[in-house]
Length: 230
Image (cartoon, one colour):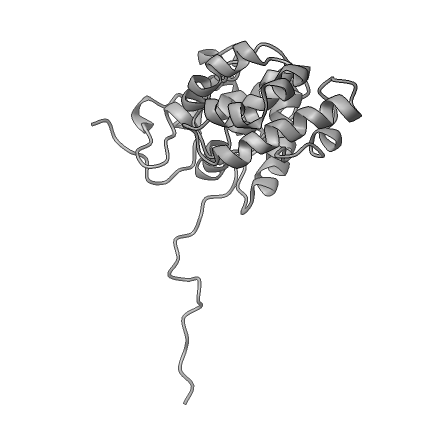
């Protein structure tokens, strides 16, 4: 006599489908109302200092990076000045942020490469940026977007969380989420999408305690366990 078995996934909670294009457009429109001209919270004065700041921000907060670079960028805001400062002094300036030893090494190495291979200018293509030591796809996308106005989306932990939680861009990896965001984001919102989603994740759609009661897109978001007002 055969015994019926329960499908492996039957006990698992079924996830909501992703947002459609109309819902995605409404979500961005709401976020845009609160921040019509969003920008990075990292302090920088030119494309080079932006590149360094973003590279330093891996596994660190923007507030922590801004504190560390406050004096550093006053002393060295170009590749030439950074090389003259030297790795030991760079390391001393950024020792309050995570992975500072390796980051100091990368800052010096990328500065040298910019001088030797790019005539002292920060390159303006993703492939070229990703050749620089310590620069991955996320960092390259941030620099292209913020410094050069390219409609790129850099998927960090905030965007990855917001994309999956709201179901705007469900995906198992940052690359999956980035690709879905590029498909679902209306062209008019593509340039600023990166900033809106980061800021939304940082201040409202937080990892542990999302503040759903004050979320401007709570009726669009498909997060099933919305948090009530305290």
